[in-house]
Length: 414
Ligand SMILES: Cc1cc2nc3c(=O)[nH]c(=O)nc-3n(C[C@H](O)[C@H](O)[C@H](O)COP(=O)(O)OP(=O)(O)OC[C@H]3O[C@@H](n4cnc5c(N)ncnc54)[C@H](O)[C@@H]3O)c2cc1C
Image 1 (cartoon, rainbow, N blue to C red):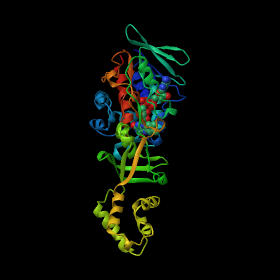
Image 2: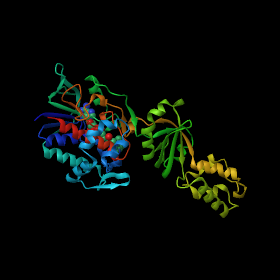
Image 3: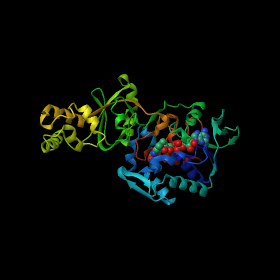
């Protein structure tokens, strides 16, 4: 039996605690907040997209970094295992669009409460308001001996699991402490950046659309003529740019490319009618035109878009709003169709850490044994969750990373 100190009572820390305690170790979760799982509480807009009910091999393409490193973790604790774990812990689950798994209650608090119950049942001790300042190792043997808390107390331990999370939404407690611990112990930490974030845009007409949400929209992002990313889904306009599930996923793919792009800008296009080809769209518009040849353009196109989009489409469309339908030329119509199929805007930046769902980068996986989550250099030192250089697209995959790496670390401790 070992004395296991877990730094951080978030998703990874709680899950590691349950399994380490079930294995009869003496487990102490050290959490600086007044309660466990503050970030888990806000996941999935308060509903917690707890995992993705896909086959295990389908997890890997959803990883944005180091998928191979996760092989042992994912196969040791699969999405099906996660679902069974929570169902057995008294949280009935449901599967929604895109295999996203949520508690049937739609309450993330049920996930946290279940983990708390399992921790207590297995005998883990939870220390709230307990912030770790430093990890201590014995220099001769390079093995951990414990941690020092911010009040100066030394806590002895045979194993330490660092589950301090990333650097995003710092109000939830993830302030990047784990990166500092790793550096102080001589481990490499890769550059960190916000990911799964809203995107900032250049044009004046974007803020005018603030609050408008589009469900079935195509997105293409280009660097010059080169297509960098294409997707289809839901997005929203904000006072500074664009957001929504499709945009957040795009941010994960274009982050590094945006940094390197000329002027730090990428061009983007929305297909506002992705279900129709240009020809079908032309036929549709002609039908509207034929029904009211004496009407003004602005009064006819309203049927094609949500009302808040119409003024911007008129601004960009190149056809005077008052122009009579029968005076509109074929070229003007074609130009307008081009606009509907490729509504343009320029991406100038990514959102900030405080609004990022996830942190890209972290403790280098080259430092870590993928079969145990233990540091290759320092024995007894384990890492789990977002503190590692691991991140994925949205859909429950980031929590799956936390659950699986935490499980593996807990099982590896002797
Ligand atoms: C708004 C939002 C929505 C999200 N929705 C989803 C979703 O629906 N599905 C999904 O899969 N992922 C989602 N994520 C991502 C997911 O929440 C994280 O990937 C996951 O919580 C990471 O787990 P973790 O345990 O590594 O870190 P965290 O859950 O961040 O936990 C880290 C814990 O460590 C504590 N801590 C840090 N430093 C110290 C210290 N020095 N001493 C003591 N304690 C410390 C912190 O207080 C915190 O409680 C979302 C993220 C955000 C921000």
